[in-house]
Image (tube, rainbow, N blue to C red; front, side):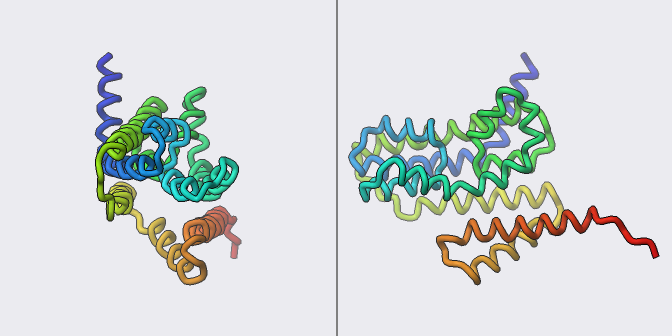
Length: 229
């Protein structure tokens, strides 16, 4: 019993930075969702079943434009294709969770990936708790925002910057944990090249592709046999 309590405590403590980002951002989503005229319950349902913050914000504009489920689904798939790259590096780790790996795959977000890859533990129960806590924060924020948005007039200008601030905090934590400049140099280079060559709509996917190519080439170079002289 003590071990379970300690595991919950360590998982909660690890997700505190995400909580301070997800709850306000979820509130902003809920308020904007309520402005479309839908019941607060649907905002909660979307956060439980869909659970992808960027795509949920994108869906607000599509819903306002009268887009159908197929259009929203395809757009969400393209926006979240980056999670495929995340999943490749967690395949072995998630396999240890057995049946729980399906929820881990579903609940993988940018912030959850950052936390898991910067945490030395390989306990599947820890991974599950971190994922569940993070989704819980998002669901709570979305619900509160949707309920408040249906009753109050709230100005959400600038609130979406919370997500940017959250990424900055998580990046700093990873840098302090890894103490290696190589991954961050690749990320900066990839983002710079993508920003130079591509429009803002293709920036994220382009940067991920460039970084993947660099990592693949670098990985092969490290494993090439050395020629004898």
